[in-house]
Each structure stands twice: as structure tokens, then as C-alpha cells.
Image (cartoon, rainbow, N blue to C red; front, top):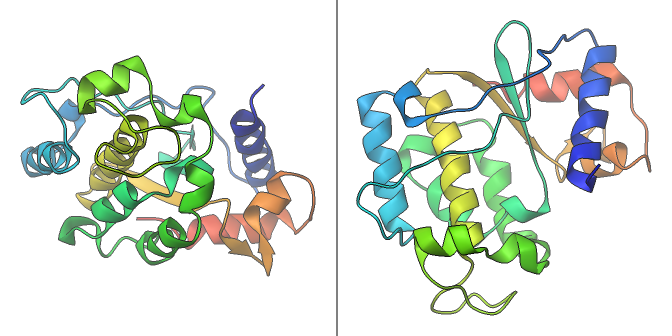
Length: 206
């Protein structure tokens, strides 16, 4: 299991201990699930980030988890915090989401961590969407094709929440829970009551 999968598994376990129940499969978001206005905004974001196709096939991965009552939960880790994500969060459509202020800060303070790892920086499929990438860690003329795709897909999920298509709680490894960084809790370095983690998730629902 990857580090990403392990941390999501620990979060799910803590939330179960606090009383939440989850579907075994969380499903995925598709453009057809969005309102016409949200779909138009997704395409504008795709163009803003340098997308090449006027009719892109957009398939964000599954939601990290989904409760039995329909709440989607997304756990954002190191690679989500880039200037591309900041550009999407700065759009009026996403400005009042409960995670926007802290996520914008993390895009500034933690972009260096997001720039590590070649496999997380670019790929053949993302370069088909956004063109060639700069060398790993270099935000030059081309930057990171995979970073742009990740920002687009995060924004697509955010728009689903902002327009009422889904209920979503988005939290990151950098958020604080009872004075402790969530990433340290999920990595087993610190402990807090499971109910504190549930409260943190509850404060992020839109």
C-alpha cells in the first residue's frame, strides 16, 4: 500500500471510531454530474491552466471516501499544493468554500514539497492534456503537467460542492486538529481523540 493509501486508511479508521460509516467503494465524479454552469467553469479552468483540447475527456479519480449518508471526504497530501491549485482557489466560484483560506496558504508555504518526485510531476497522459513539462521542481515556462491536472481535478470536485451537486469535506495533512498537524496523526507520530478528527471534518463540509 502506498503512503497515500495508508494515510487515507488511518483517517477512515479514525472517523469510523468516531461513528461515521463508509461505502466500500466511493465512486467517481464525471462532467455529467455537474450543472451546466459548473461544466462551463471546469472548461474555463482547463483553458486557464493551459489545456490543449477544446473538448477534453476529464476523469478525476475516485473520491477518497464516501459516508453512507453521502458525504464525500477528500484528504489532500503534499502534491496538491501548487501555484496551479492556488489559481483555481482564487476564482470567485471557489472563494467561499470552507477549505479555501487554509489551502491557499498551504499552496504558498508547501509548494516545495509538491515539487518533489518525478512520477508526481509529469506523465505521458498529462502532457497530452497540458503539453510538455519543465524538469522536476522547475516552475518555468511549462511547469508541471501533472500538477496542472491535479489542480483541475481538485477544482472540478470543488465545483461539485460549491454548486450543490455533492456534499464535500476537504482537509489536508497540514491542517491542525487539537493543536496537532493532521499529517503527524495519520503517520502515527501523534494521537488525538477520534472525535476531534470528526469535528475537524465537520468544520469543512460544504
